[in-house]
Length: 90
Image: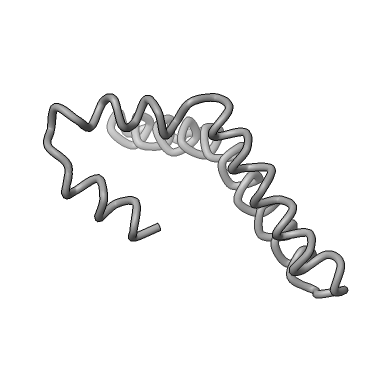
């Protein structure tokens, strides 16, 4: 991850949009993602590692947090508004 950032930092500002357009093209991104998934499969899934299970558990936890956050935020804002007016928020 550091090498592409160093390469980007060494470029002139005018060169950055063209470089990003080439680096983030649909085919390039698709190829990179599939290549990474195949490497992950070979390294962890095919060897019987526990890492895929922990990765799924972590992803589900993070997803649950992000899905529930708007509701919590709405509740907190309602409680703050009620406290400002001196009312119970329920």
